[in-house]
Length: 261
Ligand SMILES: Cc1cc2nc3c(=O)[nH]c(=O)nc-3n(C[C@H](O)[C@H](O)[C@H](O)COP(=O)(O)OP(=O)(O)OC[C@H]3O[C@@H](n4cnc5c(N)ncnc54)[C@H](O)[C@@H]3O)c2cc1C
Image (cartoon, rainbow, N blue to C red; front, side, top):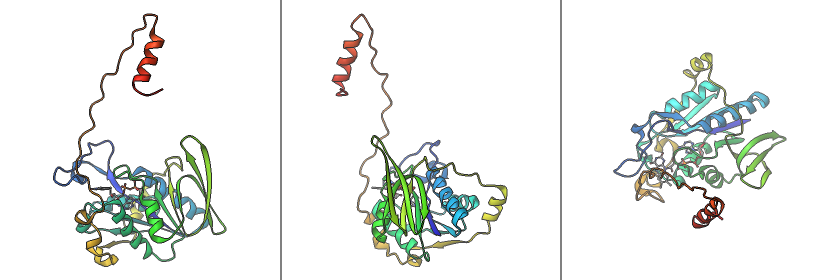
């Protein structure tokens, strides 16, 4: 099994995250950067499959220079090699451009059977990249998996929906699978893994190396752009209902006024 795992470096959710005033793109210097937790789970799932069925795990990431830290973490968990798409012209790329660029990089990795992604990045949060990549590459997309099984050239997933229970989906390989936070518990990199990661191959590609035209990416050519951003208003103190024998009706009145019933 040749598995590609898509990993994104994101601002640590524990640090203050903000957009730049100039163009509303992510202010990457304002926050510590980490490998997105959902991508640790994506890497873990790829490693579990490799440990069972053999093969190779290639990590692919698009991001600026410091993305190498996230890539090294994935390699120290046990991934075999990595491809890093890094070019200043990618700054501010929208989801569509990102998906097309990543699809181009994945297309150049030989004999890919399975592409594993997180279901949603904690910064951009479009939750659209896995399906878009599947569309560009003409592959089936199995999304929001909480369990993945590979057998006889097919991938089967268990998918949890918010209210309705579980759905079971199946597709022939190669396919794109996005995983949710219930898929597994990612391993911690061992000391041996951290040392080994330093020697694992990381191929850095510019747009030209990847065969991507600069006019297809970047803020100026994005299919959508952020035109305004404002911090979330602080939570109000809420409304106190004093029970003077009519507490029940007051609560119902409140719920009706908020259109909650
Ligand atoms: C209008 C607009 C402006 C934006 N501006 C910025 C910006 O300034 N800075 C910014 O960081 N993002 C920005 N984004 C989001 C940007 O498009 C995303 O980085 C990119 O499109 C991925 O989308 P997402 O983060 O919502 O991914 P999702 O679809 O939520 O991510 C799902 C999974 O896809 C994979 N994935 C996503 N992105 C990458 C990547 N870069 N490399 C490898 N795997 C990946 C991961 O496995 C991830 O778990 C913007 C998005 C929009 C719509």
